[in-house]
Length: 519
Image (tube, rainbow, N blue to C red):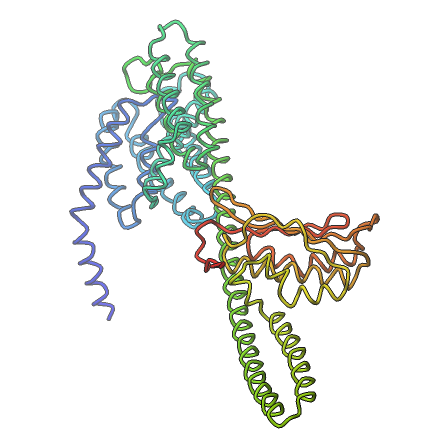
């Protein structure tokens, strides 16, 4: 069993050997090429190291280590005679394993809620490599290191840190599966304008004469403004594009001696500010994206809850409709049977008795049909919400109280879906019932339907007249408890203001709900 597992691992290792050697070669070439265009204050190979560790699976890390050692062999073996073999070996061996360990420890945080883990990787790697290299130089170099140690340490650490936060965000961004629609926003005028402003500023910096170091530093810091705007628009993705672009423009517009390890004091002062700005923007973008994701999830959950509430409401209304239809069928059969009885009585000469029976039948039938319409307002599907409120059984029940008046109905409710009209019907009848029970005085019902480019809905108010003190706190509390769910089902809201209950129900135009076909 163990023997079979060993064989499988060997076969897997052999199968990945060509790809691994290719990766090692490309990585060594990338480190060597970026070393040629690097400065002590902006050391690109450190950024390449972290980027490939983030982008590569762990099975490729041994090959990356091989490529790193090949790069250091080409770079530092010629320096053995100058700085000693111990420094060449020790300063070359420890860097990749230390950074790999830092990235490995952050692996659990990479798919987490925020993207701030990239900053801790950059800070830890920059400190470990920058301070480690300086310590080995101090200990192992035959001659003392020139310059103030603190200044050199700051230069090394900031150089590694700036390179990491320049290259690593791009690697983290490219490894994510982002739909093409996610990049379409970059074509909008605000994003495109930010990118153009940055490129034009970089071109202006490149055209400045060599003696204008203060103007160059000012323009370099000015490039942070469009990056801030990109971060506000796109969150972490905007920072992951804007910060590297800004740092690369600063790097390529920095005066150099033409030799690796060049240093420009004026640009270094600007880079210290840019390091702080870059860190703040990546942190801000991470936080912004985190809360945007939470907001999107919340909106999706709310939308899903609204869909489920609508489905539940429509299912219950469908059941009530079937029940009301059965009640109407029952009363139709009873009317038919009683009418036959009346005809038989008339044929037998009991005309006065037949007349009294017919009168009782009509009263009972009307009352029964009114009760059936209270179960489900079937006429609403033919005549719309307004006429259903004024002509169904509910209007008769309100009329008997002598306290309810329906007026100021405006708009065409037949443009709304049946589901929305049913929700409005249930909400307004429940509000009227609540106020009839808990408040005194006349009630006035108003409603207005309206449409906007993408929405349509209805606003309903039930007002208690001659109530200067407003609704009782208990009444308002019951109204909020009983009616808020109905308002939320259709994305609306409920307000209890002074002596009025106001309800808004909305839906998107072209909703999938069944559209009411008013006659």
